[in-house]
Image (cartoon, rainbow, N blue to C red; front, side, top):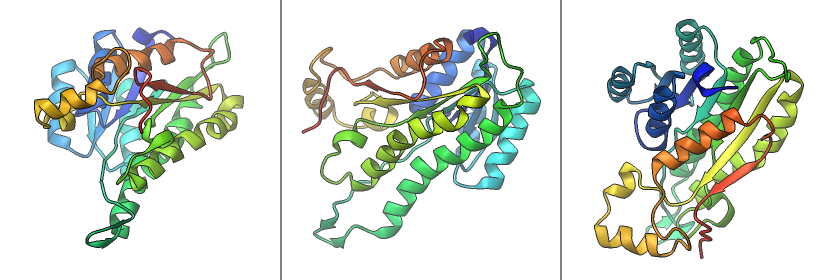
Length: 251
């Protein structure tokens, strides 16, 4: 599948890794529909890159179903689903103020894991309607995991659990959808220079970058976008998680 022939739904496309992916895909000729809770920001980004958008709550079935239907109507098809929507909440299992707030844990898992699955399953239904190419392929789903899913740090129980869930469902989802010609991949980024990271003091950013073996810097969201594009165009990649972290292993 060539990027210029791709019709992509990108969640979290109004900022961070999702925005970088939406911009990169659009610049290469792909049709893009941005799904994001921040409808105003999504509309701005969509207008800048010539894309469609839909204000969407990824945890809500009706909201996602409407957004997927909108994307399919506007683009004519959906051939790629890239899930980048996510949140980070830091809290220890037992901290100074008591046990980890259960609603915070539930919300993190609901957005990062359940939300990704919700979008993936509904996009899979749309992708399955496509005519298969000569290689029997109809489309691809790419979810965003994290290196925290492998070696989460203190205060990351909720986030690590949600991203570990993404890692764990990659292969079974790929097996579920194999007969339909739909590939499933996940990208596990390390520390990237997203808006949240840019809000930290320069000395903190430098300290984090120094932990990355090579190249010794924070990841650029454009590198995540290019990785997603590579996955779209490489049909033999399936059922795998790609670490994108400069060989960083969290202590």
